[in-house]
Amino acid sequence: MANLCSYGWNNQWQQLKNDLSYNELEHGRIISTHKTRYDVATTEGVLSCELTGNILYTKEPHEYPITGDWVVFQRFGELGIIIDILPRTNALSRKKSGTKASVQHFAANIHKAFIVQSCDANFNVRRTERFLIQIVDSGIIPILILTKADLGIDIDKLKQSLGKIGEKTEIFVTSIYDIESIDRLRKIINPAETFIFIGSSGVGKSSLINRLCDHQLLETSAISTSTGKGKHTSTRREIFLLESGGVLLDTPGVREFGLAVDSDDTIAETLDIDQLMGKCKFHDCTHTSEPDCAVLNAIASGDLDVGTYNSYLKLKREAMHFNETTYERRERERQFHRMVKEVIREKKSRDSSV
Ligand SMILES: Nc1nc2c(ncn2[C@@H]2O[C@H](COP(=O)(O)OP(=O)(O)OP(=O)(O)O)[C@@H](O)[C@H]2O)c(=O)[nH]1
Ligand SMILES: [Mg+2]
Ligand SMILES: [Zn+2]
Image (cartoon, rainbow, N blue to C red; front, side):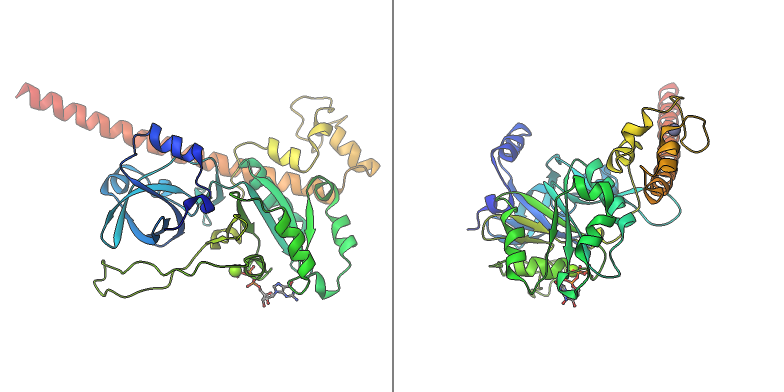
């Protein structure tokens, strides 16, 4: 019987489960999601689960379980039915690509996020900022990892180019060919904490996880009753366990981000220009053309990097656009619900007058 504490189950989760009166149900953690099926780590290995009709018909698809969620389920032979999702401590989200802005959550209940970039052409300060803002805004602690240090690139120069964000965030330099660099990283992965690896395709996220896992649980998903073939399928695992107890997430959702933040405060704070902003002459200064703008003055005097400033304007525009479209969508939904209620009311009054 596997101990779910290694997946991060603890007294707080147990308490939450009790408070919601789910004592009769089993619990488990989502280790990967498929279209209509979820692989759940349970006390008896990985169980293939589906959603109860209640979730399917009362929740929106963006409220369905995601990797990292703790769920309660009922077992029916080789299949589980997910009854509910325990309230998340946090979730990482991104803006769904396409014209309409809508948030897509892709990983839940995370303590720390590793922003992974390789020491080659992939390294990009602006991308680092984008990842950093989304992570901080989600209430997750960020850590920077520079991989492929063996490629012979000037690491100090790379670190310098990160400017203020490099000073504020812990940075690890790794190579899969340098065991000590992996050991240093392993030391900060605490037992029972959940870590997510974020970064573009090819930067070495999976390679790092492979090196960090001294021991990997080999499990196969349950026999598929939905296809009736009774065949073992291998699990596309997105959660990995370290022997020391750390839980590592490697999900495909993390490769590109569209900014999905509610206010631009996190953007200014992360880019370290929030204090400057407080010194502008006008309290509603847009920092673009106003006289006595502390931000523009700092650029002129060389105290603020113009690249950081441009990044701030761009990300702020993106966040603003995201919020407008989210607002419009919510408004449309509200109007639709109002209309439905009206129709029901009219029908009821017609029925009662017959
Ligand atoms: N030289 C060098 N190559 C590395 C290192 N780490 C990973 N690689 C190589 O980089 C390539 C991509 O590594 P992956 O671990 O698959 O990258 P990933 O970030 O998981 O990519 P996706 O799963 O597509 O998001 C592979 O060919 C690795 O062998 C490293 O430290 N040094
Ligand atoms: Mg990978
Ligand atoms: Zn200003």
